[in-house]
Image (cartoon, rainbow over all chains, first blue to last red; front, side, top):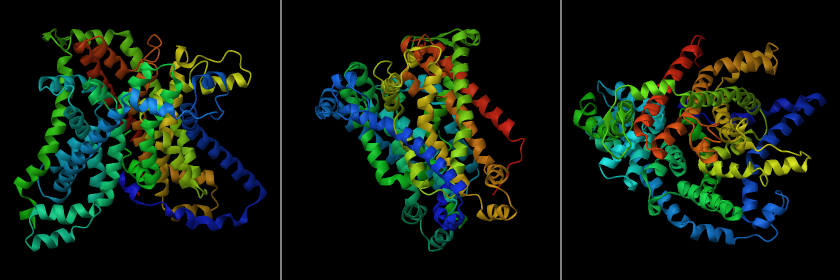
Length: 298
Length: 292
């Protein structure tokens, strides 16, 4: 699978010379095609524009005026209200911490495993790789009750450690899958030369191999960040105190409490999605590549 | 060479932490789910062994099979919609200007949490103030549907945000696979006078059949696991009309405290997922897989 991702799609422009011989018919055809593609683009984006618009409206405006109108007097106060009244500040901070810690552990552990499997020689490497790969086929909900019980028995319920451990375990398969694809493409010569020079395995891993994998590491970091930031079930099941909850669960609770205050709900939703949108705006190429590489996880 | 690189101690050190984590948090729990299914247990008190009672109940439980059917139905919808995504990807991957920009736009919803998508669509579907019904009223529709509150259409309504969320994902994958098809083959076919539809049908699609197969598995097995969006949007309602396997399991365990029966449902979910994966693979590998 992952091979696909590393083939960049720059050749689209190389094929341009074909359209010099366009007839009127093909032009109309292209026109219809672009119209359809454009409509789909609008459908994909407009709900978010609509969300932004109503996040700045008063209830009177939402209920009384056209849903497509711009807010008359933008209610930025909705954002202040969401940020303070809904504990969104706490949730936001928790989300950042859990996401960062879990991503770091996942990527480091996955790199160790991938190195040992693709670079070192041992009998059970195929079996162990299979165990990691098969992990992504397991439906999370089939593990939920036993996980709850295991964490309860070691006093990790309502403790962020349970969340971080779960994120790491459930993201290891996809991370290892992406890394394995990349490790298999890097040549072994440098490492072999290092062995000849008497380098230790640890030095080879940390000083030679790991630095070579930085491009794919950044891809896995982004994929992991998106999954962790958006995760819902673990937090909703294992954490009960408001002080520990993440923004995804916090938003859900907040909306449940403020059912009728559309402006505040809209503002809360906007706050929860803005970081992801900013990340996408800055790193869209890497994210698209990462998703193509991580296609096996839905 | 092999000496240093087959150091048992280092291998253990590198592999063990991650291995322990997935054994402890993924593999042991799925075995335990099956085991807990043999118990009468409220999650807090002591477990009482009741043999196969929960599983016998599960097999006869109409609600469970109804939720399984809903999950499968979503899987079928998702599989059918793959055709649309494939057509769009074929268009985007065939020298369309702005294809790169468009597929990035299409992907945006995929990046949002299912909770945010659920809450947003709860507003979009709102019968009086939602975007869809306000638009329908403007267009002169007198009695617009109640969407999520109507048990006859709720499952179809739910599928709209699902398509909205995942369309970009499938398009990205198909697009990447299509860009991998060797250009020489397409050029050769063109010289032989093949039209774009023939090229797509006879060359491109067979060449990416491996990817298509994986996507069919993903669409169906992914649908069997749907939870977040449905939990947020309808909670399985109205009256169980949008209940899926995962939401049924969650309600039994974490709302009704039937942890024993909930575990049995969880085990049923696992078994059905594995059977479906095996079945689809079996059905789709009869055709020859083309490698490139």
